[in-house]
Image 1 (cartoon, one colour):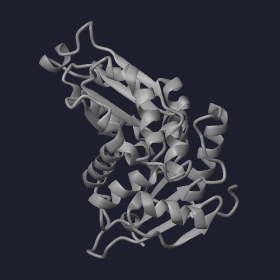
Image 2 (image 1 turned 180 degrees about the vertical axis):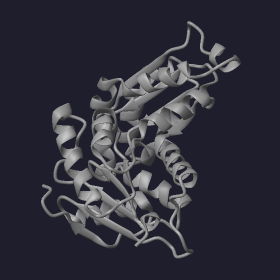
Image 3 (image 1 turned 120 degrees about the vertical axis):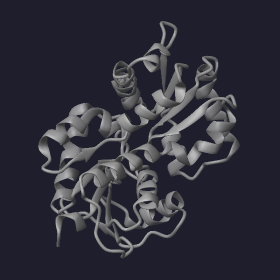
Length: 281
């Protein structure tokens, strides 16, 4: 098999990365995709940096052992704490979800304030604000002058969103109440855009949008990451050859049936070809 025809590897701490998988599949229909969900050890958001690096490194080895041509860390917590380590360790390109989301936020804000929501670990790491200010620093001319002294990035941890999504509480009153509780302080800042800094959060996008000012644009890091992956493959001549629709394999570290049941809701279609990953649990 030619290297170009090798699959794309995607991983997350559980189900949330399926929102990134879905966007990659949408714009790269011919690529073969392998997804790993670490369902035995979810969530990552309340674990130490050392533990997250350890888990992420094990999954990287699992995916590269299946000859993937790139790896997408479809987990904001792993992207914020383990991405640099994985990029230094891997023999293939490794993408995170934070830089693409930060870049889009800077473009969309046009100098207005930016808000970010995510897990406690992602917010504590300040990975998004760091990436946003780095992106602003790279701007030149009139674009850089838009971000004056009054500009700020506000980050907010929303730890209850993930369990609500995984339990299927998407439009219930309890979910709307939790969203309102978390976002009330952010809406007072009148942000130009809000970054969904966790791959579970797009599932709640409509309910989140209902709590925002109509002028606040929602940035989905999964969509932006998929676009960055496509651009990289095109520029480096790494797109899969032929016209055959891409295949899909899914691996989890625990509970195949639950993954199939809930994962189907994330993708909006049944999930097949799911197996337990050997050696990771």
